[in-house]
Image (cartoon, rainbow over all chains, first blue to last red; front, top):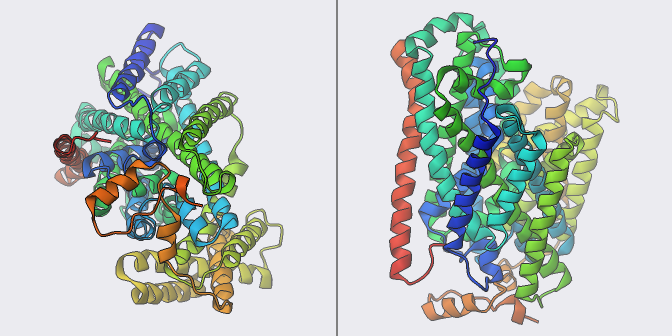
Length: 566
Length: 42
């Protein structure tokens, strides 16, 4: 088994599998295609996506190809608790955003992006910071997913890496281009059904083919003490903690999530996101168990590449049919995320860039659609080029991660606290990015008083994260108490210690600095914002929805279409 | 110990199956509702 190579499909088989997948997906979208799409539906469907489609779409979007590989790697590296420390925190990213999502939706029921809400709250500079972070995040995600397609095709067939990248890029673009978000959520459902059905079959199949529970327990002798410990400190510190820090940042910084928050029927936000949390956790942790199985069997990853673990286990223990199913599993997961990224990118360019900053309240819905479709084509081309040339995006990743961390507090505070100003938002993010760079790249020596200063900022960051999480579910007082307790605990335990973990220190510093600057500047301001203004300033771009809403006579104030607002 | 580990590994596909059934039923309900209101599912 250790020396076994992966099963190889013929070129024809892989092409047929890809054609079947992308052809079937494309045919599905023909059923919902309208000759004349409207801009709002292209970005968020009708704001009334049902619970089933919403939950399926959220789950499918959040599961990308890397989820399986990374969960299996975590299981293989950290043993028994490894898959949990990958899948659980990823799932909590979905869970922890919904209380804030309900607030976003209440403030701006007809928004398409979080940036629109921030534009209505603060103006262009804050909105563009958020839009930029969303834009970079989706481009990176797109590139990573296309890369995964290339890697899968090159590993399982004679076809080259570039062929896989181009196939995935063109396939996803074709079925998303015309109907945008509507096509994305509809195909997400089909992709998720395939993905879940395959996961339900593959996990037990590998488990029993390798010898079942008795073989797994016998193989526990191959594990180190840390790997065999369910409460491994090593796993918590190296896998769980960095993910925990990122829980809110990923959720706030990702337009694919906000798009679904604004698309799902408002009454169904909670069940939709709870179901997606459980669905994501179950699939990803389950596939991560294959990494644990490989570890107990003493299997070495082929060519030392951890990404080969799952294909290796499937190839080694199951017949070729299962490898074809695994192929579809990965292509389905990466395509559902990539189409969501395309929809997210197009919505940002349509609403945040064109709608708010170029057309300035006089947006032409048909021109918006053109902007959205052109964005999709350009983004796909950029994703394919970046992926094909395997460009190093590490620096971009580092900056986007920091930016996401820096905007968490200002974005959330802006939606709950009337004193936060545009200057406080913008300044806090910029200062946070500067302090992040100082710590992350060690432009200042992290020793003595300077090191202590950064640890204090990071402790504030830790308090902010815990405080916001508790605040989301239990309210202001509980959140404040939890935040202060976390801050005190961090000051006691992290001082003279955290400086040795530069990445964690820098991330927490970004959170802490933006919180500190934002709070101080807001307290110094005399402005009070009327949150009711947001609902009036953020509306639909096409006429039809305003008509529908007034027909329903719900009693809510339906904002006029932005195309008619002056 | 064997039973515990079997449960630890197999609970995830079982949960996945449960969520799959829940989502499929909900989508069927959404579809019926959409037809009743003469509008598209998405």
